[in-house]
Amino acid sequence: MSSAIQSRRPSKVSIVGAGSVGSSMAYACLIRGSADVVALYDIAKERVDAEVADLAHGSEFVPSRVMGGGDVNETANSDVVVITAGARQKPGQSRLDLVGVNAGIISSLMSQLVPQSPNAIFVIVTNPCDVLAVVAQQVSGLPENRVFSSGTLLDSSRLRFLISQWADVTSPNVHAVIAGEHGDSEFPIWSTANISGVPIADWKVDGERVFTEQVLDDLGHEAAEAAYKIIEGKGATNYGIGLAGSRITEVLLGAGHAVLPVSAMVHGLYGVPDVALSLPRLVSRDGVGAPVPIPMNPDEIKKFQESAENLHDTLEALKS
Ligand code: NAD
Image 1 (tube, rainbow, N blue to C red):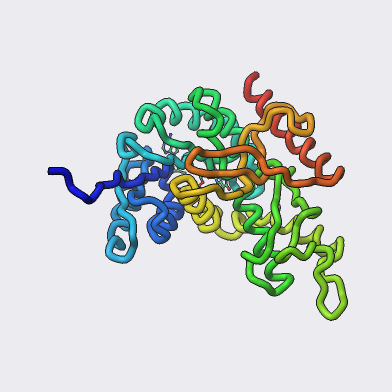
Image 2: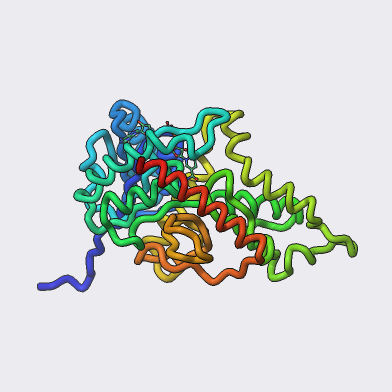
């Protein structure tokens, strides 16, 4: 006799790397119920076992289940795999400075993770995430829609927060994007930034423009340099990226399309070489889709091209 109740396979996200970023992301995913099962894997067995135990002790209070440990088969049959494993910036180091050591880690991880979860979508968070997304896609040979990086999702969230503070409105009312590299050459697309449909340059209080050129410049710099400041203060950034990763997971497991500024391959857009960098893109169960046709002014296009060149140079240096 067949049951009228259809059983559904639980959705699973695996987070690789149980350091500051990975464990915060697991925590965010568990609290938000981003997937039915949240698995955490790290080569540092003692560390990951401790993180999993600590997270599991909150099971009563969250909608998802946690598992994990020091064996890569903890990640088996995942729908989404988020990679946060690898070296992080030391104070003063740029993200691109990490490329040598982290490219090796990502290559070796992809060859172990893909056989465990042959149908998963892979999200690279380890820095420099734009460059490593290309490495991960190339070593795995997976279709480009199934390998991308969190790119400037966090940076854009930082910018939206800063604008919301300046305008004294809540973040969801603010629509603004940082594009390009998740790193020093990133830039805000000010020409389309708006607060509930009002172009940011036209936002006025008592007849006065709130976002002057100087204010926009300062906010853009503050968003781009936020990570350096946080790393100086506490050694790592983890909560913001943890939440960003949980949001990406939800979109990948959910219904419909979301538009997120994430980093995936561009082919010939504005004449740039084949690199991965961020633009707002459609993201869904099928992974990362095409960039949305966000208008950019000539100055923004130039910055986009410069950012792509920068990433291209790093990719070329990696080959030699
Ligand atoms: P961390 O040092 O706290 O943790 C890294 C973890 O990776 C460690 O636990 C280590 O054991 C593990 N690891 C290393 N090699 C491994 C391997 N081969 N297999 C499994 N695990 C392995 O570092 P963190 O602060 O968590 O940062 C992790 C990465 O995330 C860094 O590259 C950092 O720059 C990056 N990051 C990216 C963003 C973003 O927006 N993309 C934001 C913050 C941090």
